Image (tube, rainbow over all chains, first blue to last red; front, side, top):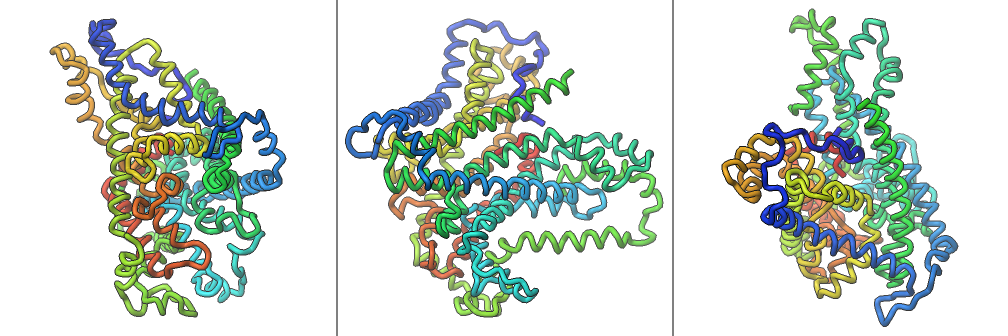
Length: 317
Length: 298
């Protein structure tokens, strides 16, 4: 998997056939070329990523509101992040969402990947393409479709479930069921992406291992637990981290389906950032909240980085 | 059938060669087709939301809100499609979506490929450090920098303009990293030959590397386009006038509790919003899925 390059700053450059570079090194023309090629992208990144990061950090120590001069308030905003009941609840909600979303998305994706990778499934290519489709539908559009399907009066899904004797009521207005529902919609939208990553992992497992196992009489479940699952561990780690990071940033489908309700039971951190930054215009506070999210995300990425770094070395040695 | 499927078929014949030797068309493999039928049913169930969008869009209002609900329209109608264009400046929103998503895609492909070329082919001091810094920015959630970006865009007077929507995304770390990996995999013989013939780096980039990188550019382009077309928070923040919204944000603003416009009309809008992406996806699907698989594209 190419992602290993990301965490393994080694062996980037295969030696050139003609002894590497041509003798342009160090000349003015060469430096001009480097600057010319890099400048457009780096200017954009510096202005719209680098500077905003510095600026958000500064803002997070002020009471900026978009009007007048912001005053320095020290770490007040950060204190509020960890003491405000609303924010603590939204952190709990985000954690709950992550706990609901991540395992379900991964299990669904893995099971479907195993099925569409099965040599016994006719038209596997067709299934792969179709099952990937939800990934290109926007979360907002997916949320409309789901809210219509789940509507307590006219929803088809509700009607069918009632036919089967199951009453789910108005799930999006139920403080207990609203969060599992928005997590389910996110699972539906994103499993195709994780499925494809698992597929790539599955295809990297050498068939010779399966052949050997077959000779030893290992089949079905045993084959899965003893070969497939252990061989997928690095893919699994990657998917877990990526899914967790995505879960921490949940916004679109919640904004459309529940708007954070009922009784703020689906209010997540990003929803709070949007609310405090762009509705209540508490820019300083919203920045502090953003930085907390940023730090959590970076910590998760660091875990991934360390894990993949180690895996990469294992493979190389 | 995708190349992935072909590869797994090869693997299949290899792993199951013992069984396959007596497979020839003497009898249909019942278990295999049963497996197919069951999985087809499961897939259709999973696709229910997409199916419901497509079918509800063609239902008259009376059927959309009817009880008991039905899957297929009894009477097919185009009323919803007419209504969406009168309820919303929908034509304008479609144009906006194309300009925004298309603009971001064009700029990002151009700037990312230039930077990626420098990182992959021009050895310069600090290139590794620069690469690591670029990769590190990949991990920043964009919500974290949204407020300063908004202030910057607002100071520039770019709120409710295409520049405000496009400029902050005119280059992105992921695209640079993705293209760099692809450029590295291209053989160096060709560009070295061109350099020996006296070609400038720009010539090498333009006439040797880029033409060979079309698949990667296509994949990155589709991905960038789809992401921006579907993005909700970005257009919600940078546009306050309905006239400047995108399809995704425009449809969303009209829903909300109680539903201001009827569901059938919403579905017609949703179908139109998905259609360009579905067509794009069908054109490049094989390469797209493979690239997602091999890079863990996010």
